[in-house]
Amino acid sequence: MKVDLFTIGNNLRELREEKAVTQMEVVEALGVSYTHYAKIEEGVRGMSIGMLFKLMQYYDTDANTILRSGSKGVA
Image (cartoon, rainbow, N blue to C red; front, side, top):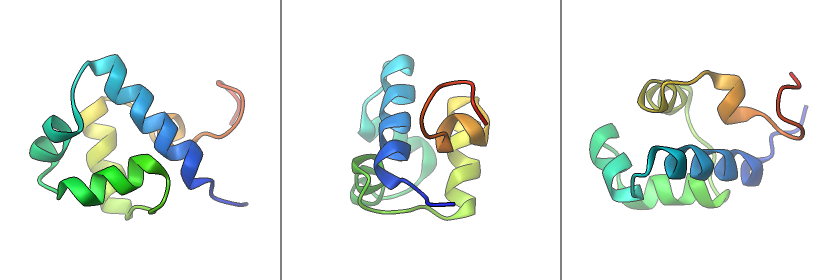
C-alpha cells in the first residue's frame, strides 16, 4: 500500500478549514513547529504515529479520515 502524502496533506487542510483555524493555531495547540506542520499539510513530509494521534485528538476524528485516499467512506 502506497502512502500518498499529498492526499493526507489535503485531508488535514480540509479538516483545518472546517474547524476555521489557521496553521499557526494548530501548531500552537499541538506544540510543534510551524515548518513541520506546514510541510505535512503541503504533502512533502510524512508524520510520526505520535503526530497522527495528536492530530486525531485535535480534530476529533479517526485515522481513516486523515489517512484516507480516494473516495470518502471507502476504507
